Length: 296
Length: 281
Figure 1 (spheres, rainbow over the protein chains, first blue to last red):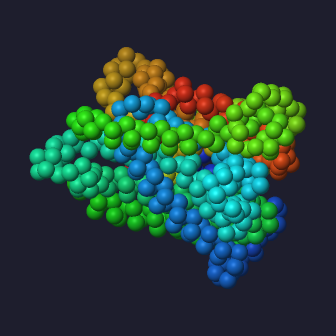
Figure 2 (figure 1 turned 120 degrees about the horizontal axis):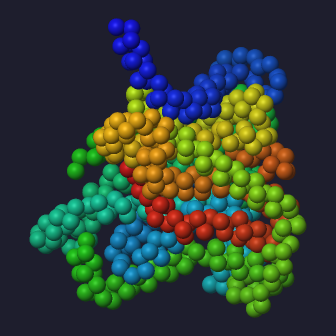
Figure 3 (figure 1 turned 180 degrees about the horizontal axis):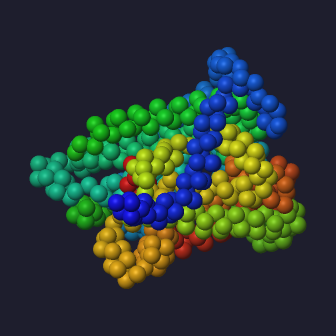
């Protein structure tokens, strides 16, 4: 009896040892911070060796009166509202076009995907120069085609956010294109054959076969791009530093500034909780709707 | 689909038009990189005279020489190589070990732990970066490579990817090896790992790219100049030399070359890692 039980325990030993390193890392660097962050958001913790005080919901109450935070939230929503549809349309167009082309396929796929693997910092520096209103090639071109007063781009609080969004779309559409391409290639051939027999035109085939069959993949790309849009930081940090003024300050950038420049860690933790909740809600919506959508 | 393509090819002008549009579109996509190279090979005077005249008249290589002395470029480069390699190797091994246990071994509370691990896929790192920083600094690891390495070693994606693969291998393989007297450690290194070369390459390339390009975490964790990575160095360089276009672009070109090499060598695995992202959902 005891030896049997011992043998039973023993059979768990290798598995436990194999999982142990990952488990310890997860516990210390992800799980503990997750809980700790939640606790921290109810304190006035200021970092480095300062004893924090519990201040209840003060941080959260303050968030909704804090103009700076609200501006960053608004900017982030504008970013999401433009980045998501632009990226989806562009990546869908590229995927469908690529799927109908036999020549240069490999080159085209790599060319579109390439920006995605290069570093945000490098390309942000390069785009900063390209967008330079005086000496950059973009305005040079715009002037050449007869636009007398092209936008000041990163120097202008009206245009800076749009410029960042355009760079972000350029950088990531190739990635989503590959996902969509895999989705398109997974659509069963017989659906098209049936549509053909019914005399459906190319456009109708796209509308009634491709799009519905692709809807789970499109939905996934939608969720991924939305979540991605709430994590934007690198482009803002390198291209504009949140400026001019507050015009390109976004959620993660604001969290970074509060925590690591102003050392208001407790307040930054409260902002992080808001970010966490936003992403959780999106993930839950995905979880709910996915079951309904994947029915074809 | 071959049929559809054949059909499209029969309406030839339309096909070639589509191809032409795609080629123009691809050149537009690559334009910033071409401009980057072109700007790095010119003097700033030449560049400002006419920004669109971007085929250089004569090659000016000085920028590539100067960039190594203008900032501690070699130091940044070495730090980045060191961190990316160490993190990639350790992360791949740790995730594969955990994945093997999930796929083939008995683990107490296996499902609960797996679900906990997978929450990491949904939860962006940005939402825990503030408290994580406190935890790491209270361990005395702020401003050290060790602290930065430790926070990067766990990857929910890595565990998921490798578990998927190990689950596709037949259990008979393990049983036969056990009969032959192999212990689990030996089975893992001698049988499982060699069989999963393709998945391992995918994960390796994915992790390496991510680490090479990482910016926000090093920005938070690495403060001393001797610890900084290329991405941090580039950013500091940009702040100091706003107008040295040629020099800046030479820096970005050098910083991008290793990624281009990795990409060209492992293109297949890149595409696979993206397809896996599709699979996981």
